[in-house]
Length: 225
Image 1 (cartoon, rainbow, N blue to C red):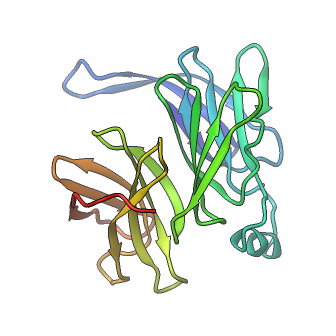
Image 2 (spheres, one colour):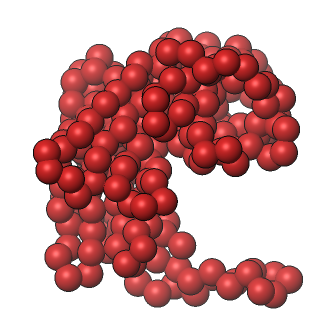
């Protein structure tokens, strides 16, 4: 289990998860401390024990820098780490607010949530030349999760604070066509959706605010772009 850690160090913490018992246990096995000024956000593991992670916003960035990122200016990238080689930037990954992250089963493609650019990004890994495609989804993509049918769920925030909508789209990773599943207006009960997973015929949406999970029907409609 790879965990992004902020606090006394900016790092990826690694744990072994044992779910065989009724009460699962975690055992810490090590960490990789991020170079300054990387500000970590999402992480996915690699088959050989390494990982890939996003630099959403460098630590120490000022309000002006955040404003430029929100306007679509590149401010970060994706990094790859291995025991033998340490930290390296993934070629072609420079982005405006690289946020959520997923990886294909074969490890050849990365999928990135462009929070600043309001886009879904597909990036090749280990290929020359680098292949990169992006599609604008109309909201700030926060986190990505695989759906049972092989599509990706991208969740995030639309509009402007404090009255943001909570948005979820379903993206075909091959064609980059997408369908809107959720556009929920701000309410005192739930706001600022950040992540979505599919549970049966429902979409469960988490938030950076409050103490609730919102549940919506997983509508099946035609993919569009």
